[in-house]
Structure formats: structure tokens, C-alpha cells
Amino acid sequence: MGTWRGLRVAFVVGSLFVILLIIAYWDDVGGFDLYPLRDRKQERCPQTTAAPTLPASLAGISTTTWAPAGTTNKSAEGRERPQPGSEDKDGDESPDLAGSWDQVARKRKIVDVCAGDDFPGRTRAFEEIPNRELDHLIVDDTHQIIYCYVPKVACTNWKRVMVVLSQSLVSPVSGKPYTDPESVPPDLVHNSSLHLTFAKFWRHYGSLSRHLMALKLQHYTKFLFVRDPFVRLISAFRNKFGRPNEDFYRQFGSVILRRYGNVSGSLPETAAEAFAAGIKPTFQQFVSYLLDAETEKESIFNEHWRQVYRLCHPCQVKYDFIGRLETLETDAEYLLKLLRVDHLLRFPSGARNRTAASWERDWFAQIPVSMRTELYELYRPDFELFGYPEPDGVLHHL
Image (tube, rainbow, N blue to C red):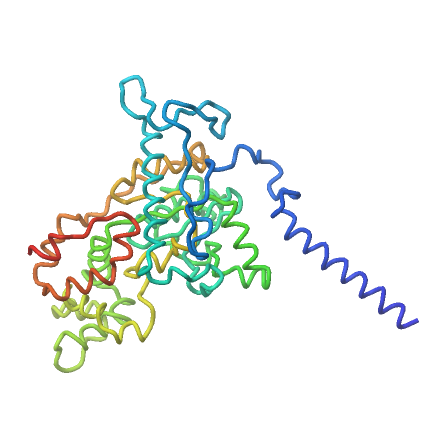
């Protein structure tokens, strides 16, 4: 009798396990729709084709395929869409077409650079990336979106957009989720508990986490925004060391001052005290810290100055949209249309970051040429991946 009861229990448990596997895998073959209220045909991205033969780590990275100029295809809404080469009534390409061409070029550039023999980590497969290095990939299952945030590249406002879309934060005034990104307090959006990232999948899904990541990477729309690497670096330094910041002073500023600041005696205990005494890291000391081999041994770079290729893994993740801070307004408008959420919200019109590319000459004027060259090599993958020209003026002509 006991044996029979044990067999019944085993049968029930086994049945439940099989049902869970069916649920997990069925969507991969199109037999189970996790979003039954949405029209799948309206949600698909523009048709893509595989790039020329690439290493296994680049599998899936491709660029948008267009029909010949002057022909049309149907948009996701079923309307006829002119192809690049078509013109509007004034003889100019429409913003949407210009955006499409930009995306083709940006994605093509990533594919080409990732295929280079000397690109760091190009042969690493996505499955080999540790979970802790996937903490910048934010997932919104409701709208099937994945956003890789890059600090100092409008990430506060894009996180506000993701909070509104995922309805992950309730307004204390209305008692309901925020619906306007501009009303979301910017200091709250950096709370990691608000965002579901790939790094959290293991906690939520256990052994199925990598399979679910692969599914979402295949079916969701993935985007990131980038910026001139040296300008982003200057912006990070100004923001974290140009004014009192207790956390960054304790963790990084004090270390930089002790190693490269020739500070005699003990350092002030707080950032406020240090600034009052005129003690703070210089940009040259910060660059010395970045170039120091000991820095890399201690830990990977802080996210504010970590290279984008190490934050977002563009050689392993096929991004559908690559925006630039330099064209933020037009790129944001185009992206929200691509995501089909432009009727739900607008991108916040917050103050533009005041760090300009024209400042590079001033910031690097006191940096020795050898250090500038070494720093460029450190960030060269980002320059090349995202189509930013080599800063010849900074490297050779200051």
C-alpha cells in the first residue's frame, strides 16, 4: 500500500514538472503566447538577416535589411512604409527614415568591430558572462523591452521611463503607479530594487534563468544609449569628484589622494571637510588611478567609468537600437515610436548635461601625452564600437 501511494506522489510531482517545462519551452516554438492581448504581428521588429559568417559569440548580431530604394514594405501597423532613398514632399528624408539609416550604420559598425581579431572578449559567448556583469540589463516584460543603462548617458531619465512602463513605483500623492516620467523622483530611480535585471534572474527562476534570458534576448526589443567615451569620463569625474560626494570620497577619492595626491598626514574623514580644506582629486590623479594596474586587480571599474562594452556586452547582445546622447532628442522620439509606447509617455525634457566635447582640450591639457595615449587604448573599444572618431586633437595636438 505504501509503495502504491509513493508511486502516486511521484506521478503527480513528475506531471507538475513536465507542465512547468512545457510552459517554459512552448513559447520558444510559438505554441504558447505569454501576452495573449497583444497582436504578435504588430510587435515584431523590422525584418533582420544574419550578418556574414562570424565567430560563435557574434551569432545573432545583424543589421536591418531594406528593400531597394523607392520600394515599400508594410510597417508594424500595416501601413505602407517607404524605404530609405524615398523623400518627403520637401525633397528631404523624413526623420523616421534618417533614424533608420542611422541604426543600420550603427549596428553594422558593431558587427564589424566585434569581428576583429583584436577585440577584447570577442570569442566569449553570452552564457559565459557572469550574472554579476548582467546587472545593467533592465527587463520590462509587459512591453517586451530590455534596456542596458550606461551611467552618464541620460540613464536617469531612461530609468524613469522604464519605471513608468513597468509600473514599479507608486506615487505617494495619487496612490497609483507613476504615469509621467518627469514626475518620478530622479533620486529614487537608481534604487536597484525597482528594476528587474538579468542579474536577478537566478533568484527568480533558478536553473531556468539562462534559458529565459535567451528567450527574452531573442524576442524583446533591446536598446542602449552611448556617448563619446572621453566626454563621458569627464562628466563622471565632474559629477563624482567635482563636488562633495561622501560615498565616492570614501571609496575612491581618498584612495586616489593617498596614492597620487602626495597628501601628507591623515586625510579628512568626510568629503565636506576635504572640500572645505581644498583637498580633492585632480583629473590627472583620476586618470592615473584608471591606468594603474592595481586598480584593475582590486575590482572591475565602477559603473560610472566602466567601458560600455563591459557594461552592455554589445558583441554578445544583438541590440535593436543604439542611441547617442549627442542626438538624444531625435533618437528618443524615434525609439519610443519603435517601442510603440509613444502614446503612453514622452521622454523627459530634463536639463542637458553641460559637459561638452569641446572641453576635452582643456581637461586633457595637463595630462602627459603618454597617459592620454594609454587612456585612449583603455577606452578604444568603445570609440570603435560606437563610431566615435579617434580624438586626434587630444592625443597629439594639445
